[in-house]
Image (cartoon, rainbow, N blue to C red; front, side):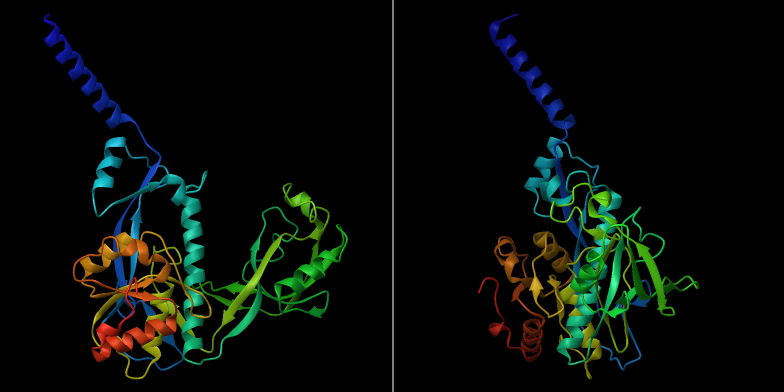
Length: 370
């Protein structure tokens, strides 16, 4: 065989081999793409996204859409070819797998975490909205979690309100910790609680039960967690996590299924404020979308997948997009045509921007970047 022909054959075989390797070789990346958007002022599955019971609420036109991203599963690993194709597309974001799923996290673990973050986001959205409107918000000290195999398991339950420990009233996490750790391991602690009793009607709600005393033995911290820090290892514990649950003078339900994570907080707050504002129509009939976490005081925080959310919003018809300040640098790299980014730090700031949109003063909107 002539040398030139042999060289071409060898090069062709090498190319084929490389193509096969690139198709078969898996790489540790995860793909994100634009997900559905939901109008917090509208309906989903024939039911309002936000329902207010026990207080006047008002119909509103326009859109205040929360945005989502679709993420490939924890076990999915694209081929090198698919990853390269994803990197070349504007509507796919390819990121290291561990950025989305920390080592060892399963799809079930991720779903549980997202559900918990979503529930916390709903709570903060309600709280921030009502504080913005001057509506009083109460607090309850509760059991947030119970460690499997701990002395508290079967005695205390997530959602129980803690009223007192050993007969002394408590209203903070620190007070509960101090009351338990003053005991020696092996001694018992008496919790006065108001249990949360699940509604057997099937709607998943819970109602307060009768106040009761629950006696729980203690163990050493290191008996529950061998990795407990040395300074805590010998302290008495019962195996619960505690926290604060907000209480409201009327009921605000957010009815979205199969949506997780904390990034819808801002848009939920805006939707709640709109529905509780006489006359409503904070958007002036415009299509506004956005994203951002929110805390109890209305501070807006950054989220992931901003570029995919911009595409989702624009594809749905959005004209304006609330963007957390910390996401501005990434967001401005590839803004879909016809979409105006609004830099947002607080719920109050977002409401002022909506006022500018309603009045047509869009040139004064805080730009991203400013």
